[in-house]
Length: 177
Image (cartoon, one colour):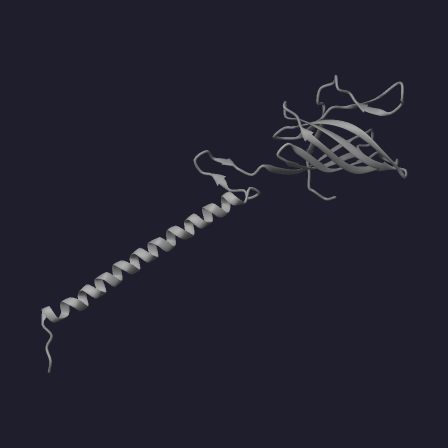
């Protein structure tokens, strides 16, 4: 039998200690690299809905929503608005269906103003004709508010009543169009 002395075993113990320490360091470096990679990916993707933990706010700069307003004597007149807001640009769709009349369907394009209101142009089709109408909205936490429309006496066309308050309330709805 061959017996090893402590002096003979010292190089083996030293090797294992160094290997264990190296393995621990490499594992720590890999874990740190993965965390940094995830953070960089989140910063590079501005459309992600990452939360800033220190400030508790969403860093996403886009917002989507759908809204509906029901009115009329029989509560069958509907106005449906689908909005996409990115930075200060607004796009979307709008459908206005008056009971037993031809619906107006079209696209919204516009911008968010300094006072946080939305000024948009609605380009729509009705009875085979294309027309436009400038609209004013205000997005609140609970609804989309719109300035009412009135008839222009000289042209007979509908226009936004800019002197009126945001009084038409469109409530949040499912996005279906």
